[in-house]
Length: 564
Picture 1: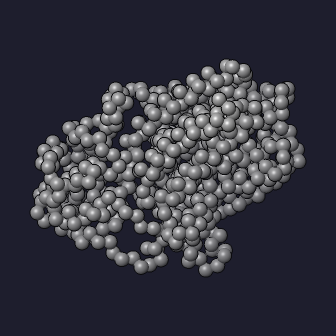
Picture 2 (picture 1 turned 45 degrees about the vertical axis):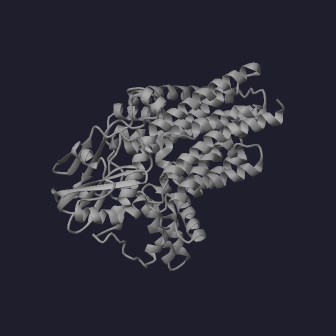
Picture 3 (picture 1 turned 90 degrees about the vertical axis):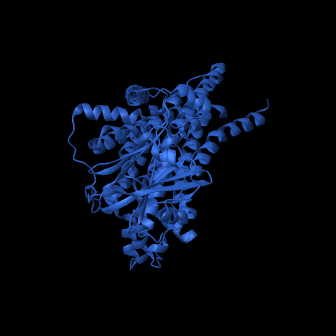
């Protein structure tokens, strides 16, 4: 096979994981703000109403929890200026595109180490998976959490380049990292260490001077985030949380005890990272390299390892108070995968001759297999997240029984681009079912209702079913309608993942039988409600309403303090 044909084939192979990643993203992404996304609406309002340039700058640089999310705000502002309204789905897309930038960097490193193009193939298979679902489908988090990693790692690489241009670019990238998320500040001391080990004395002086400016700007009028829990925890909890964080990529493995797999793999990755770190420092001190870029590679990998381990310390210290399971969240998995990418460099770069191809082929197979595990495992998470977002939008959009959103002609009401939602065409059915107890295609709904258990408690309405077996995706599934004399609420029936691996991989049975839901009283006005089932099966929709049988109590919701 000619070299051109070989490169074309490799390029097509590289596009497979990229294409799957964005296809899956498109399938579940929806333009609905989630949690901190609402802060971007508040920012736009503040920015547009600022009386002068100083006010606009303050809006851009204002603290958000412990972060300065200036870059995320700036991108949101550009989106608003270009399209006339902010779209959170586009924000997700921008962040996911930024994530792809890491693949380009790894190709630069491999190429400069004289590795053939096909050695890049494992990278997108391990880097782009549904393990990142929470960041993928969250506008602000996609830019912030993906952006800070890509900007930071590129900044570290450019800072140790032999050429002046990339070094100057590294100063810009370091600023982008610091103004994207708080842990971007780690680039500043890590970059200093790398330039000291290089050694590049003039650049070190420039880097330190610029870093001092960045730190001054970042901590100007800085306040501790009120959202963080008290930092009271045992050493055992901290160590366990740290290993969870590092090994969180292993959650998608087809094993029974996922936390234990993350703990074990986290310990292994930590030992690998520390071993690489010490070996790298030893090699840098000896300074005996076969070719010039080998030293740059060692410096770069050391910087990335320090960035990951340092971020893990910060995150675990500030978040372990919320519970250990929170450190396995999808938002943090990118750092676990970043350690894997570094480990891959130390496997593939030293290999010479005919051994290279079978090694890479084996790694591609394992990474592709992991990618399959990840998409199957986290598909249920993406499915549940979309349902949560759409029903939350219903509940804040319709404040009364007219099911018509009040016209909002204010500036705040025009900031966000409207997006179609599955229930737009179902609103007449909800009203009809409320009057006559049923509407639409109701075949099977009576049996579904009879097999569903409803148990009000002092805090919530708990609903469960053990027989429901549909495998339809996206917006299909069961929803619950609460109807009172004042208004309606809509809540989703959530699914659990199927743990039978044979059914999962051979028959695409993603969900285990049944569903569950919890409707907290803190989100529902006190009163008496009729509880109805809305069943969507592709284009078929049916609603079956019960009688006024549920009384909700007045429960105060937990308030989360913020500084934005």
